[in-house]
Image (cartoon, rainbow, N blue to C red; front, side, top):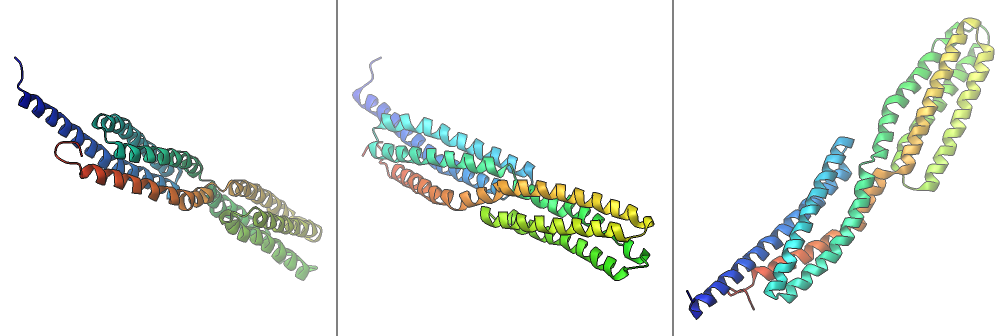
Length: 279
């Protein structure tokens, strides 16, 4: 059966209206998915466990995948509708989104490493335990000494204090992003370590034979402490949490509003389209 001219026109109009509606829906979903991606990435950066960082990073990647799916569906729709202005807006977003994805990948790769967080846990856990063990090993030494007791007490106090000095420097080392500042802290740590070992050497020559096992235990605890401290320094030097946060707040903080502004403009332009699907 041959359709009347009016029916054919009606079919064309209905098809165009459906396409406009699809385009409007996709443009709105683009904004939603991009916002989800940015929010999930921010949570990955701020997460306080490896598991949470990885989960949020995966969520961000999934949302970015949906953004790309919406782009791939919207682009041919705009071409069929001959919406050149909206097409240019979409192309503008695609370019900005490419920049965003490259930056976001760098940030997420850093965030999931969590090196500053791991260094902090080592400082509060194994390092603290080794330092306390060092102190406790030396506690019984002075009371057993008969000669040069004041000197032994001073050496014990020096040994414990210098280890605590290293502990005090761990937190600012973990937090700082300046290479020169970290280097200065590490030199101070090395000076304190040398002082602690020197004090132990002098103590070994002064204490009674019965206290020698305490000196040996203290040396073992100091070795453990310095081994953990080296792990802390290595992790802190990578600075992945500090770097990912800085990138997220600075570079990414400039890219996101530009992407969102284009998406808002695209959504608003499509929402103003007339009932015939053309201007």
